[in-house]
Amino acid sequence: QVQLVESGGGLVQAGGPLRLSCAASGTIFSINAMGWYRQAPGKQREFVAAITSGGRTTFPDSVKGRFTISRDDAKNTVYLQMSSLKPEDTAVYSCNANINPGSGAWFTYWGQGTQVTVSS
Image (cartoon, rainbow, N blue to C red; front, side, top):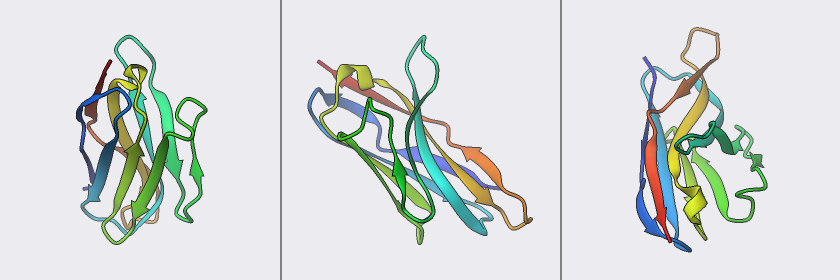
């Protein structure tokens, strides 16, 4: 069974940085794309960042230039480095990954989420 576990969330002042990590564990044969989403109270889940197995990254305009995403395939881990944080970045951040657990099929797994709160 595959699990994704996020860490690194917390309370940060506006303008500050924060780094999130998401580690995949379990029976993993291969990982394709990995990404981050967020959901603020009363709002729909929003795409934040994605990185392909080849290292290509994608961001929405709302975080472009402030957030970076990277991955360590040896550790099955994806990172989200956030800088110049704004109060509107406050949300629960969740990671996902497209994983082949060895069955030949690919599945998208999600972490449980980690709270990020940006104070003004």
